[in-house]
View 1: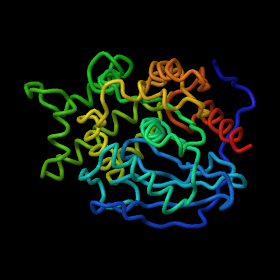
View 2: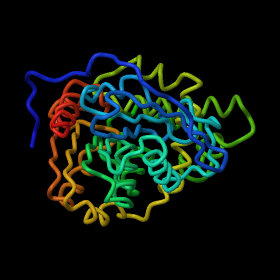
View 3: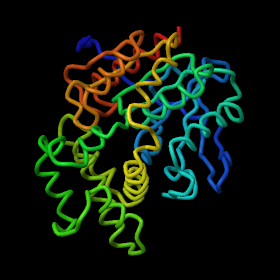
View 4: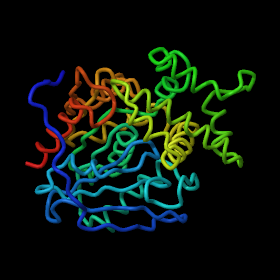
Length: 322
């Protein structure tokens, strides 16, 4: 169904974590985490996008701090986690195991709500299908199932390039026309090479292309944030690494696995005009998981902080808090 556009909810007022730390999860990785809200409240884990995007203080503000015990963390290689921009032992299944370690060792709860958008929706589905007994509810935004047509939508001509041809030409321009292979492979060569200047140039071009597709209206602030060197390198290296490997998922795996979610309440908030993760994926997931509530925002794009998207997410967390 399409969501209403009047009396929209916004973020809760700013609040600080009551505990922070780093968790060693193996292979040299240490994950930054923070707990906020009510230590005795309903447990929820927030899974950020990217992969490689990192978390922000506003992410915890999508939950009522009086009612939720909120765990936010930076996935491998990004944000305040170390080592920075590392691709070693950095796969979907490493991250699924990390979420479970955080539940056991940091949140110390038996079950929790799982909340994720964009790549975070992919990771949420992979985690909940691996550990369905641990998920009380799922709240998802901007569904990305990591099927090949979704990767092609972003990184081959004929998808998002048809909506942003100017951005696409800029994105493709740093790869010589005579170089064989697709853009994901061409960028991977540069993002994993030894030339630091070339790596940064490729990282900023990769991140700028994504920044253009994630907002409903042009946003210089989003482009500036995603192309800043400390953000762009982690996003581009880790995202490209995952795209090149198909997310370590079989084609259609998350749709087939939706049967494992039967009985778990869920809400999907999807922008009608999401040019990064179009509604096709959310619609396919709804058909595979009929119990989930799919809310399509008529004036929504991709990002969580757009008014209609944020309204749907906060309404979902408020409902499940009660």
